[in-house]
Length: 71
Image (cartoon, rainbow, N blue to C red; front, side, top):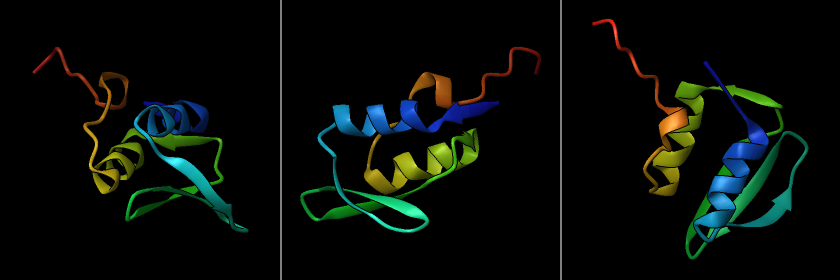
């Protein structure tokens, strides 16, 4: 399962993160004293998206979490 970068960035911005600067390989988003690097890839796997949310101190959205109904 994959997550689009624009969905992840939208989630960060809805929670108060703003674009601090653009690097060659990453966008850097900041809120207060936290700076979160987000790669320039168009699509992330869900594990990477969840880790970015954890670094930001946010709970991953449901679409970022894999749901297994067949356990």
